[in-house]
Length: 122
Image (cartoon, rainbow, N blue to C red; front, side, top):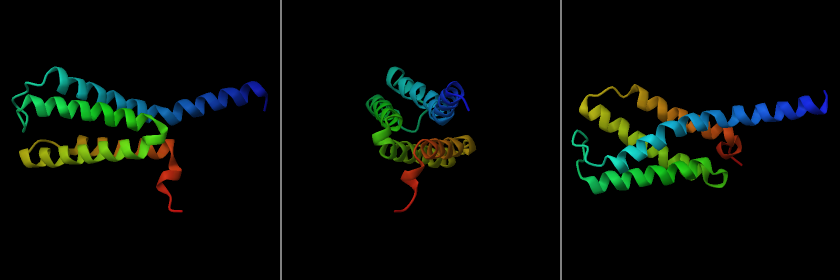
């Protein structure tokens, strides 16, 4: 292999490793911004705007921790717990929850792709 193809291979590898995380981020950030900027949502289970804003800030911080390699495990845990809670709410209200479960799985999977050593026992 030439030096140029090795460099191209490294770039493609890095893009493919980060792609699932970026796609998941495209879900969490607009969701968080919607909770912050449109906090008067009355169809939600909690209609208090302060709680909606706090939830949006929590999502932004958790997403940032998810994207930062040193705090990826904490960010993944926070996002997965939050989305599991949302799955329970959807089940309680009788709403479709399958996509929400897929988002939980995709979040954990994206974290695993970026740092698989975090998921192995030592």
